[in-house]
Length: 82
Image (cartoon, rainbow, N blue to C red; front, top):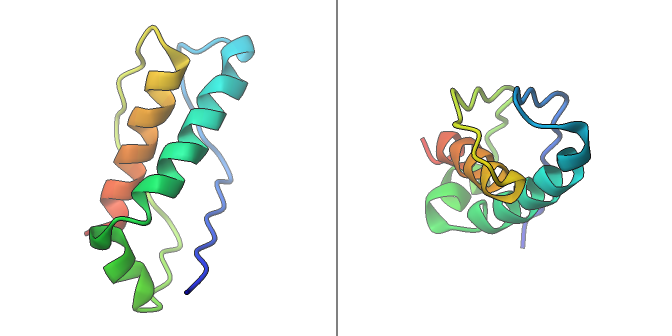
């Protein structure tokens, strides 16, 4: 089994309160871990390719910080699958 290390230097999310940031972060980490184990992502990552920068694009902020974190993680993982 290979190890995947993801380091997020900066995540800019407008419209989310500081109090909701930990919930959003927890949701993002969990969904990103799940999404990066899907075959579409592991194929590219398993090839040993380094991906130094990922721009996830625009992510809609919902009323729920958990839903926003999940949405952000899916957008990030989608970029890995390309």
